[in-house]
Image (cartoon, rainbow, N blue to C red; front, side, top):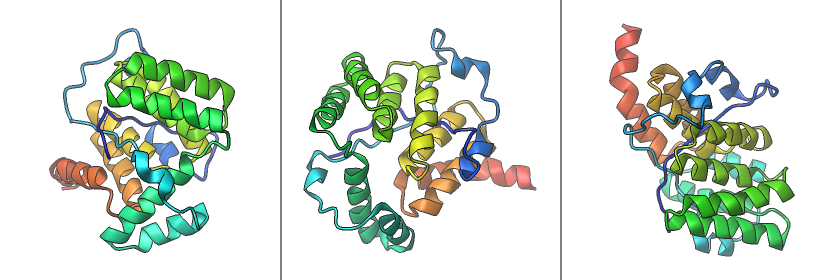
Length: 217
């Protein structure tokens, strides 16, 4: 199943291979100040938490092959490959860490961001190289209106896994919320290069299209 939470994203300055780095040279200071979060009424931003049943999806191919197929797949195939990638990215290699990730997600499902942050902080403390821990905690932070910590976690998540299109979508969503429409559009465009059928990125592109086309004229 899929639930929806406010979405986020960040980029990392150290990895020149990531297209997203040019998208976040200077976010407004308010985005870095968790003590005074901005009002985030529009756009409606959502983050799809992986299906609890996705652990049953066979992991028969490596990440590079799955990403290659995702970029070339039809819509039905993209849904299947997306499930496989989410399952792959959710494997920390430790049953104890996987349990903390599950507890964090369970707390998010009932909108308990405080408990989610606690579980996911324990996860990131004990598994600092596990990208999905930061990605999920970023979502929990954003749910709690802690935009600065959310951005920091997304930076770390994307440093560890630059192909995480849900994290890149989050960056676009936060940029759009901050009225940085061009860079939000660039982020959504990058998402669609990886996952051409990403519904939220497609909706974001459509939403931003009039403003971006107007500027081009």
